[in-house]
Image (cartoon, rainbow, N blue to C red; front, side, top):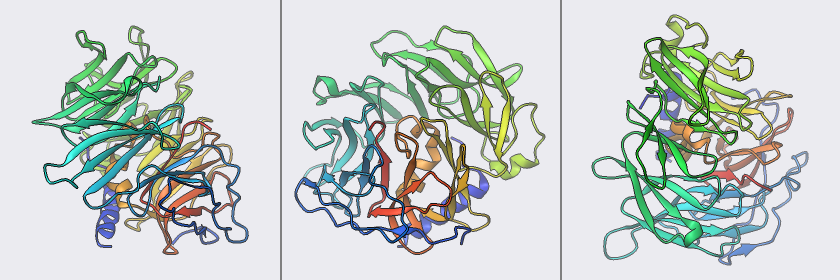
Length: 440
């Protein structure tokens, strides 16, 4: 697995160190909204406290946020911090919850659980529940699960966990009760994407496997020899996007379905991270030199390949092949909204551990400097291209995004940032992680 760009890795290391032990250009400090801690009841309908004068009005934002709160419990809430529903209430050092992941229709939430409260060995499981906490399911797994991806139908989910001696991917059929987990394949590292109909996976395993796998059985169907990349993407438009390698070098390609011809989007030399837009019309990408281990700093000194700008955040237009460079500096992660706005996270100059969100749409803007939480920096950002398929920071209508961290004012928690220049983020809750539901 490649290491992060040098400047980014240094910043993330600072975040991790600071979190373990414990200035920007924005015109004003972020706005803080104090939200009452949920009671022990399963739901709280009390609205969030009134925000400071001039704060953005979040009351009309669609969808819900899933939040790992300050106590480590999993709750959902409206984007303004109101209508808190506690899905768990017993989190502790011996009962830990992580990886909240919405189903495609936003009707259910899945998460992983490690329960060491008993006298025996810890119990590991994948849990799901409806938004109101009802209909909870539980499937035991042999090891702790660290990634969840629902299939597009919302009936099954795939998960990854460490095994012996390698990683394992398995399924939980939530539609059939969600009480059993079955192992499907092994390998390390393991990156994958569901087909649009939920019957197959495209899997990038190790350095030399790039296969289409029938989840009902059958032999793997190899695609091209894999290039240097992490996560393939099988979009709702039916197109497979991945990096291939051959005698002519490396190419980012787009294949219309498993049997379609692979069309080259661009050539590159090095290691590539990429995320296709939801409509499949564009692909955001970033290239570093070599195998990725030397990071962007070394990549910028390397010879420029014909098509891909090395070290820069760029977007390729699928129809024309045109490549547009958005930012010359490294991006730590990037996520598309449904409406086609790209959100990217960049180091704040030379200040180790501080980052800023940048939105690239009709009205581009840069947010205030902040430090991501340890959970985000350690578990999510290094693998953002895989997580871009399972979670989103964006509101369903693209009008705002959510994130977790500490701002320069010292306020820490869950923040909602309207995607409009001249607005400040609003702190809505305590917590270490937040993810927006994909549907209103």
